[in-house]
Length: 64
Image (cartoon, helix red, strand yellow):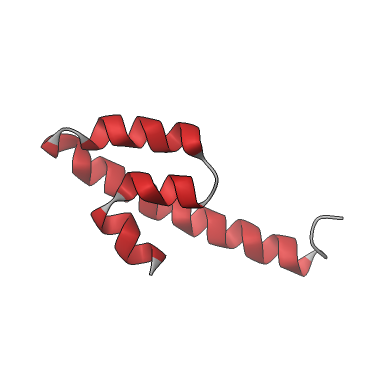
């Protein structure tokens, strides 16, 4: 579900993963049609990194 959000509304993904500053920058970037594609690519990369961070956190015992 997050991947669909990432492609259609890249800025919304950043708010769902707790990166509001990046979300605001992404909104500004997405306001131009030229900036929409880089915003979507940036959001997909950020989603991938977020998933990797969650897996590492779970494997190491939750970051305690």
